[in-house]
Every structure is written in structure tokens, then in C-alpha cells.
Image (cartoon, rainbow, N blue to C red; front, side):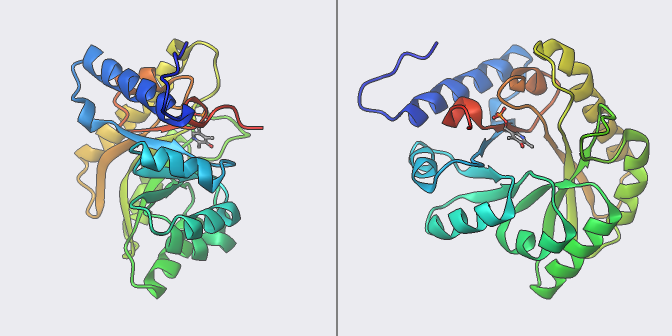
Length: 237
Ligand SMILES: *Cc1c(COP(=O)(O)O)cnc(C)c1O
């Protein structure tokens, strides 16, 4: 699939391919490619390998585990990147999350939002968050259901140290990305309908959706952040 060019790292080579595919997917549906941000998902990936990605132009990194992220963010503190949290967040880790992350993608309960708000207040920060929606209603997945999302957003919008920037979803897995599209479009439609309500302290600018197997379909359905790990760093063990 990828023809390695001599003199560049595998990660850099992968990034070239991904950036090209993002551009093509955007162009195919008349979107400006600049409106699609690449989040390089670096969970389980070593700091050294992340450095290769940064040198190849990556500016946003996504992590799923607090302890692992803490160690790597410390090592990479001098690099001009922002860190996003995309994993399931336990309330007892909220304190670390607000210190480490520019955007938390996985807020799905009022309880968690309250704790993040409290911890953000302590360090005088307005924490940017996304609301995670369980578009497939899968019992094993985190996320608020589509019918409950609007109420959750209204309540979270009242918390002064949180700022809701949009929505995130992890749809059900299918081998065929076309089968995932209805879940992506459901997230977009939810975002559009919430936007129409003009809730104070809520902007619906971001749709975080699409991973290695289905990011092109997500872009066609309006993704503004695609979260890609495997296609950049290779298979995780
Ligand atoms: C691991 C992970 C990704 C990246 O998945 P890939 O298939 O490796 O691109 C994206 N989003 C979330 C929430 C993840 O946990």
C-alpha cells in the first residue's frame, strides 16, 4: 500500500499518506481540507515514536490513559503540541485531566462534568470539552444517548469553568465504513439541532469522529477532528 521513501521515517511516510487521504476525502464532498483537524492517537506509543510524528508536523496528540499520558507529556513538554484526552475518564482522575489536556473528548455525565468544573476552577482554567454521544446505543460503550444529550448539554453549559465545543462519538464497529455513516450523520444532525437552540456557553463547532478504518466516511459526514492511531503509528499490541 505505502511505498516507503528513502530517508524518511515510517511514521512520516504514514502521515503523508493520511494527510493526502484527508485532503481527498474533503475535496470529494466540497469541503475545505483546512476544516478537518488530524488528532494523532498516541496511546501505547512511546515518546520517541511520538517525537517522529511531531517532527513530521503533528500538532495534536490524543491519549486514552491518564497515567501513561502524564509520563509522556512530561517528557515531551518542550514540543509545541496540544494534548487531547479521548479515553473513559473516571472522576477521581479529573484533577489530572484538567492539568494535562487542552480538550477532553469524553464527557458523558453531569457527575463527571461537575468534578472537571471543580478541578478547573481550582487552577483558574476554562476547560474545553466535547460531549461524548453513544450513537449506537451500545451497552459496552461510554457516551450519553442521543435523546439524553440535549439535557446534559444544557446542564453542563451552566458550569462556569467548562466550555462545550462540540460532540464526539465512537460508533459501532463495521468492516464496511459505509455502514458507519448513519452514526456519523446522526452526530452531525444532533450537533446542528443543538446549535439552533443557541444555548449560552455552548458552541457546536467540533465533531470528533472517524478513526483509521472509517475517517473518510466521517469527513464526508462533517467530521472536524479525526482521531487516527493505527494508520500513523502502526498496529498496537
Ligand atoms: C484508539 C482510539 C482511536 C484510534 O483508533 P485507530 O483505529 O487506531 O485509528 C480513536 N478514538 C478513540 C476514542 C480511541 O480510543
